Length: 408
Ligand SMILES: Cc1cc2nc3c(=O)[nH]c(=O)nc-3n(C[C@H](O)[C@H](O)[C@H](O)COP(=O)(O)OP(=O)(O)OC[C@H]3O[C@@H](n4cnc5c(N)ncnc54)[C@H](O)[C@@H]3O)c2cc1C
Image 1 (tube, rainbow, N blue to C red):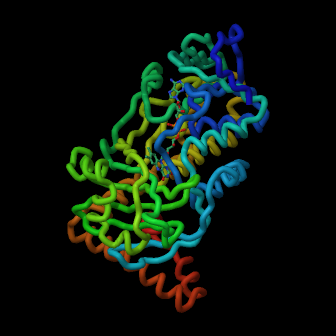
Image 2 (cartoon, rainbow, N blue to C red):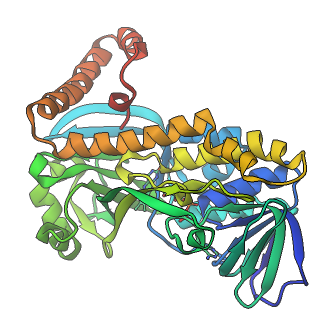
Image 3 (cartoon, protein in one colour):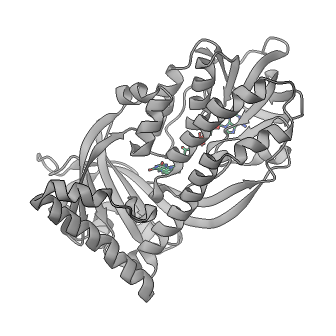
């Protein structure tokens, strides 16, 4: 990796095959896959070293298989804390135990581990991009105080911010404004003891609390807490959680200390208010959007990384090779990516699961009360069957279930 950290002017007119703006998780993964395929790639991000930012902190499920397919699972495994069992609790009682590989990792550690894997034919530039020009033949990216990069294809992986996209006439449509609140903080055991479990999920107890679930899991050298909430951000409960996290948690989730052990909150509570948005008017000559730059995800649904991995895999393995094999980069080529069936299905699933988690948590009409009851009863019953007859439980799990009910 060539990290130009001191920001001197670039050599006049850097020309590359593919320029990626945004070196968060999507841009960095895409640069890795494209670089390994032999393309000349330039990756630009405003941070030479990705800073501590509150984003995904647990990688699991299909995300692991997708990282394996693009050859980067080892990099995750080398930087994260692996754990294989989660104890799931609802209303103070054991719901079930989940057995599958999970990785706990802070987002900056994750992105920086993936940046460390960039091959030599990926040029990394630290700088703020302040203007873009896209066309059917060549793209131009201007970096503040450093000059321009030109390329055949521009990949925008700039996350949720939309200032640069607007330069190109790309807008964003709000699917759900202020859809959810996510909190993150570090815990340690109170006193000399240890926690009862290395990972635990505690589901909300009352719809009026708006709590979907609290995830407790190991990351770096701490126990990390991710709390997913559907509640107004101006609610006094939110202020109370920030100012008195332990008292507020115990008050809202009374069985937590018994299930996990007494705890102290080590430092400040981080929080994030999510808008669910989708890019509009994005089929343009020369430029393609991936990750959060295209569509944002509900953190409680845990689909952000699954979505961006689908984007990276489909773009880099199926579409870019075809696009670069013939002259030009007209919008008709780019449209094939946005119409890719695997991408469409993953994006639609992300939106459906966001809506499902919110309704399952807070809706109180008869239909959702029944659905919630069924959702959790099914898990409790399956856990009972599993204890008596693991083989029979495995056969039952193999039966087709609605995809939303199967998640989280
Ligand atoms: C609190 C929270 C919790 C989440 N939890 C989960 C979870 O449990 N599971 C899950 O799957 N997903 C989760 N997500 C979603 C997931 O984190 C995101 O989908 C993912 O991080 C998006 O990555 P990205 O690369 O698209 O965007 P980002 O990581 O935001 O990267 C964008 C990059 O673009 C760069 N950039 C922007 N503008 C410029 C510019 N002008 N010039 C140069 N560089 C620029 C930025 O510096 C940044 O590095 C969560 C999100 C949040 C906010």
